[in-house]
Length: 117
Picture 1 (cartoon, one colour):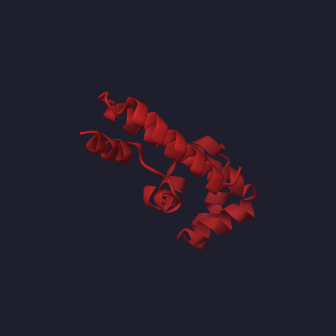
Picture 2: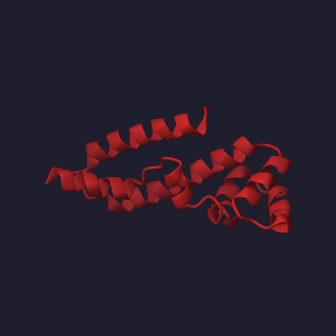
């Protein structure tokens, strides 16, 4: 599925899930779940890039130097390990994910709780 479709479906699920549980005190759980979701999105992006040359080019577009991008694109780590490592943590930041349409669970919970009062 495309990234836009993935974000659309994910945001739909986030809104429904948070609205259902907004009366409970779930801030800590939402923070952990949000971290896991962001790592999963990073994994999906990394997996979508597929070939090392495409990974290198995209890392360069995200602001990594040529040498570092070459080394990171040829890593022997698996996709999930890369998603949790500084390779994607420093390049695909929360700010970039939000620009792509990601809704933070904690922020949405705060707005939903304020609207409920």
